Structures are given as C-alpha cells and as structure tokens.
Image (cartoon, rainbow, N blue to C red):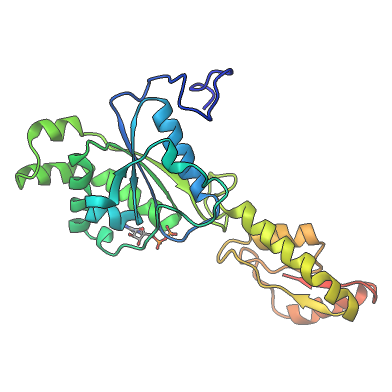
Length: 267
Ligand code: ADP
C-alpha cells in the first residue's frame, strides 16, 4: 500500500487517483466458511482497486457465482462498500460449490471471467478455497484453449486474457495458514473467547470449581493456546501436542496443587 498511497492522500475518497490499475479488471469473492473481517477485506480490495483506476467486480456467492455468472458478477462502486467495515459475515455472500471442483465447472467460470476481461482475482477464503484458486490458476491457459476450441471465445480474447493473477486472502478464524501472521477473523474469535471467560469467571469463582472450555480452532491449537495464556488457564490441550497416556492423573494432581481458592480453567 505504501507504494501506492502518497502520504498526503486520503483513502476515504476516490480523489487523487494514481492510475497504475487503468485498463485492468479485478474481481473479489468470499468463499467457504465466513470469518469476521471478510467485509473489511472486500472493502479494501474494492476501494484500492478503484483508487488505482481498475474496474472492480463483486462475485456473489463465492465460486458458485463465478460458475453461474449473470447477475452474480456485478461491478462494484466506491459507495457499494460503504458502512460494512465493522459488519460480520460477508455481504457478497459465500457458498460451497461442488461444480467448481469439476473441470466443467471451472471451464464455465473461466468463460464468465473472460467475457468481462477479468484477469485479476482476489479470493478471500480458507484452505479449500485457496486450493481451488491455485488449481484454477494452474489450469487457466488450458481452459482458454478449450474455450477457443469450442468457439466460445476468439483468439484475440484468449491472448488478451492469457494470464490470470490470483491473490488469496486467508479468511479463517482458526489461524491455520502458514506464511500468514494472523488470518482474517482470528483476532475477533480470540476476543469472543475472552469475553466468554470473563462472563463465566464470577460463577467459577463463586463455586471454586474447575471449568473446561472447548474453543474453536479445529486442527490448529492457536486459539486454545493463546486464550489459555490470556486467561491464565491451568491446563491446555492442543492438537499439535496430544496428551500422553495417564494425562488424567497428572492433570488432577496439578489442579489440586494449585491453591484451593483459585478458579481453574482448562482449554
Ligand atoms: P474453506 O475455504 O473455508 O476451507 P471449503 O473447503 O468448503 O471451505 O472450500 C470452499 C470451496 O472451495 C468449495 O466448495 C469448492 O468450491 C472450492 N474448493 C475447495 N477445494 C477445492 C479443490 N481441491 N479443487 C477445486 N475447488 C475446491
């Protein structure tokens, strides 16, 4: 961003454009499970795209919208992303799409993009969505050749759209993607966990009991580990470090060693 925005430029208005994106078309979609922050990411893509002079499209309902085309692919405006920065979920919709897993589905999706000269795609989603995006990028030139052979596009369109650029933004509350410091939604999920702990803390203190909390994260222990640290938990289970045999006894012993008056949390 630093290269694109001069220090005295306001991002709250489309004025003062630098036109490095002129003549380019970008599409943005959200796919798979929703994560808090997806709307902010969509807004950033739209506004930065417009700021650099590109034409930006929403693809509604994830890959399903890309396969179905039509009204699912609509041009975005500066105003169309107003008042959504703090809204949860995703205002452009998300879906799971079986058809995109098939070659036929991806061929239809490629046709819909080429018809609009979209050669830049921003996919906001989790592991599955980004795996699909990578496959689509790898297949792109073969898909264009097939479309040309079927007479659906001409040679000029195939040449003009010969390269597909994809950016993946990881929308996952689990923080489960390597190479990304913090995935979109993780911080909000952590915030929610801490709110819940704060809410049950008074009950826990009143009864001097041990509370066990199961938190989000699936195969990734980040949320369990960091919330355990933040709340001062006495015990934590994370998938990366499965408990050894006999953990029940050692956990009970550890908890009984801690002073009787404190509240225990195990994650
Ligand atoms: P997430 O992105 O949250 O991990 P999913 O795994 O359900 O969610 O993936 C979302 C969508 O991405 C799927 O419905 C499918 O359309 C597409 N997708 C996932 N994996 C693949 C794949 N291996 N090949 C092609 N498309 C895929």
